[in-house]
Length: 165
Image (cartoon, rainbow, N blue to C red; front, top):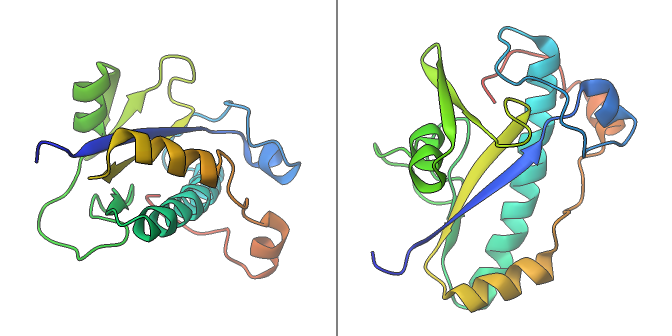
């Protein structure tokens, strides 16, 4: 596909206490620590945040007549389309595309952000739209989607638990 655009996205990884206080911009938590309840809780919220952004991007891009999807950071499959046996590996993709360093951790790995290092949550999105259309859609959606309501998630017991998010 000659016109496939890969859009690497990054979120800083604050601590759980920082998220609860409304600080989503700090990069304090090493996401490579496993097992860790704090890392699991933060990963879940970062996943919810990128899922919200990707969902909005998909709506906007589809309305403009263009395909948009993202690699699920949990499975490597697409977030929205039909799953297949093919997976996208963030570690391989981002180290190849951007030349960033990575570290193998167990069966997975972690991409080292140049500033945030292991306190970063990457997800790659993809589209067949022209670059200008992509830029317009990003401007329309904005950088900050509706952030997860952490207190509501805690009340619904949707925070704790083991996950590879």
